[in-house]
Amino acid sequence: MGSHGTAAQSGAKLSDVGKRARLRIAYRLLPFIFLMYVVNYIDRVNVSFANLRMSADLGFSDRVYGLGVGMFYLTYVLLEIPGAIIAERWSARKWIARIMISWGIVTAFTGFVHTAGQFYAARFLLGVAESSFFPAMIVYLTHWFRLQERGRAIACLYAAVPAASLIGSPLAGWLLGVHWRSLAGWRWLFILEGIPAIVLGIITIFYLTDWPSQARWLPEPERNWLVNELQAELAAKKKKRNYTMMGVFAEKRILILVLAYLLAMTGYLGNVYWIPTFVKRVSGFSNQMVTSLLLIPALLGVLGMLVNGWHSDKTNERYWHTGIPVLAAGLMFFLSSFTRHEMTLTIVFLLLGSGFLFAYLPTFWAIPTTILSEAAAAASFGLINSIGQLGGFTGNYAIGFLNDRTHSLTASFAFIALVYFGAGALILSLRVRDPTGISQTSN
Image 1 (cartoon, rainbow, N blue to C red):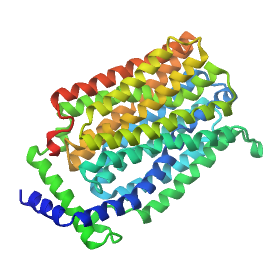
Image 2: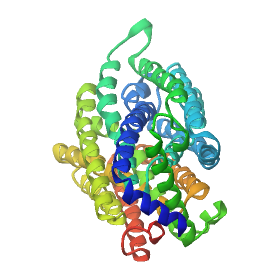
Image 3: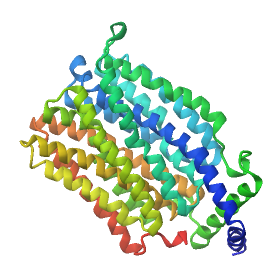
Image 4: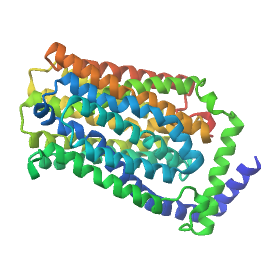
């Protein structure tokens, strides 16, 4: 009560200081964090663009490609939970830097694979290198942004996902057409796109600050205001329920979020790695035309995430803002499974479905931070993300299997729709437990 009251009084007396602090923090941290995640996502999904030529050059079937993509996610889960806790208790800045440098090196070496075994090994090692990057980023944002601003902060982070497509799609279209030093363009795609991660990883060590109390670039009144606000928020959560890290695994709401995220990621990560192939096979367009069309869901995604994250914070509602985009994406893929012979309609539904889904991401990750705090919250990020990322294996392998087995894309479209519908239903079921849309532990 004392801590909360002190912070409340400080907030009233230092409202101008608080406004200046929020702006200074946002301007310093969010653009750099956005850039890091752009580079991360370009490196994560460049294999989907490379596959417009890679599988044909190396003689891979859809099942081989799907399994190779999925190998990344089998190893990705290994360090998710411990990595998130390391970021919380040791140094998010140093941990993120380590991740970026190692994944950049592995990405560059992926450009030299020649066999299915080498492809599997490269994807395996990339998963090990990149594991826990996302939960570490979420942990870092909780160190700098209050609960009521966190949806927008996470939206800025996630806006990098479609923004990466805006950059990566035309870049991939260009690189696929080059043939330097007797190396195919898809090889240069991996080699050149691994370098920025290494450079940014080194810069991260010197640019980011782990905690507000260590921020010399914040004037003392602004630094004290933020520290007090975050401490009051933490004290309020502890009054409601003091979760241990093991308590995360017994919290039903977190377990429902785990299952919902697993289903959503099964469809999403399957679509991310197959959407260039889907559009190519449905349309027969050139590689450059395919990469140009994929700018459409990227633009929709940027707009959807920013607007949805802003409106969710304004209304203090999370579940409808999370569930509706997932269900809308599922509807688009469901409709595309019935228009397989209508090229224009199918492409429109595919592009809309790919774009709609992005809007759920920032509001989804605001939900666990309203329930848990400190190491327990960090563990929940790792738990949800690690299990959810297994969808990258199941989704990609299932799509490759269905394509090879049915010699059609219809079953894959229906599969993606089904998992989206399941995820949306689970997320909305949480609203029964929390009718206000935002957990009472956040009040």
